[in-house]
Length: 64
Image 1 (cartoon, rainbow, N blue to C red):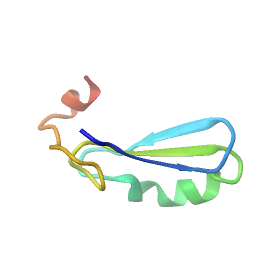
Image 2: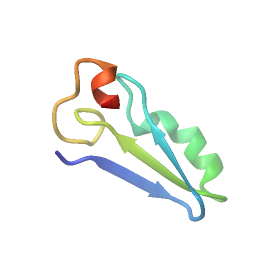
Image 3: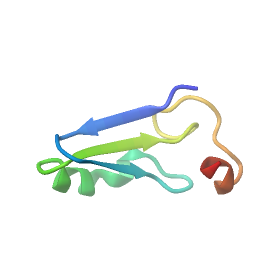
Image 4: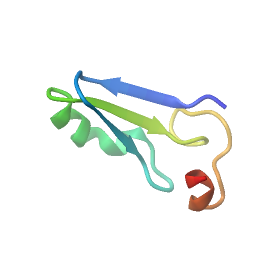
């Protein structure tokens, strides 16, 4: 499995993980606002956005 992980800015990292059916694009406004003061880390879960693999059926499976 290969996850799409995007990094913007420098400083203390803040990690954003989208909800069911989402992807990194959902964090666009937060990324643009915060990247000048912190490192913004965006992750596409498997089967979403630019990540490979199959998505999970249940949200709890992503948590695990």
